Length: 227
Length: 305
Ligand SMILES: Nc1ncnc2c1ncn2[C@@H]1O[C@H](COP(=O)(O)OP(=O)(O)OP(=O)(O)O)[C@@H](O)[C@H]1O
Ligand SMILES: [Mg+2]
Image (cartoon, rainbow over all chains, first blue to last red; front, side, top):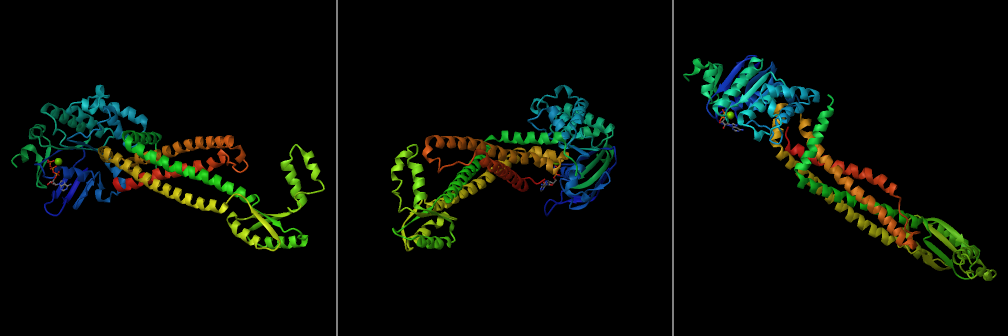
């Protein structure tokens, strides 16, 4: 599903943000990416979204070579990947329903489909009752759930989350993680960047540990916790 | 090519108008400049069109009349006529005999009191008024023709019409130049302001655009609201001046016709529909064109999708 072959990314001359990274993530996997600040985790996410291009190496997603995807084909490519961020990135002037519907409008989905799918997604993330609220009227956890609904409403095969619990307290963080786990169980491949060792340990999923742009550990928490 | 959904079109049109509304001040400045620009253009066109119509009418009327020395023979008159006809600027020469001159004079001055004219029946007061009426191709050649005619043997007097066409066409040129420069400057300002409006709009919606792109919006979808914004500004900025011009044209027409009845022979207005048949498409094309170009240019520069 996601394959990186000797990928390096150099923003400018000097230290690379990613250095000869090779990763293979299968369809339906749940994977944590861990690493200190500045280790290159967000850079990795941006490469997977083709926001950035690797300086060296090749990335494959759903069998497609990313270097072969031209500018015009990027929108279609991205429609297969949902993404959530630490700061939610919701549209502040639109309510919960509109934020989720926005993702479908952007991909030019039929209105009929939008009216059907959005309520479905809102009940999945347990926000059906608050569909009229504006983002600022919601808690951080609720906002992140809206963001997750928005990321999934177009039914992507892959969900990327860059520190989705970074701004949340423990209770909310766990709620989000459970939701991501549920989404994964429904068949979506989920990649989560996080700093939260406690959550990673308890969830007992595959962990890829990055240090100064290099993969230094890949396996269950028990196998890599000594690093 | 995939077809575009109706709901997508309406959504992006809605977003375009939302941009205008969110960015009221800039939008208003752009619309005002467009309005001024197209208003001036319309004013220029309607004045210009009427003016050249008047000059044209003047050209068709008698421009120059030539009277002859007393005792001249008809043969001499014919010779003078042949000489005049040879000149390029002359369209037509018409001989008016003393009798014809008297007949038309009578009609004009003894209207309704024809019996008064009877007393002159055997004593034509205009016996010496046989003349050539000379019609010109080009009124601006009038004064050189007059100089030539005055130099001819047998010519007693040359009258020219009151319209000093040459001066008029010089003034015409100067006014045209001022108007055209004004319009060009205003077009440049309009494009600049629309471009600024769009740039501000892009800045305001930066985050939204970034999210749209991550979700998988096509370039055309990201750009569409800004194109709509530019075109809408252009459209509003051309409809407003058209409406103003329509009212102005009508009321000036009514005012002049009522207050200056004595001028109506000379001052005939081109009908409203003839002016606006040209002006409406011209203003709309210009307005929409400026709006489109302004936003297109800006998107190319500031919205790397
Ligand atoms: N646009 C950029 N231009 C230049 N250098 C950059 C840019 N973005 C990131 N970097 C550098 O690349 C390295 C990796 O950055 P990245 O954002 O991937 O780290 P991260 O692992 O996501 O960190 P954090 O946990 O703090 O989010 C850092 O040294 C950072 O300074
Ligand atoms: Mg980061």
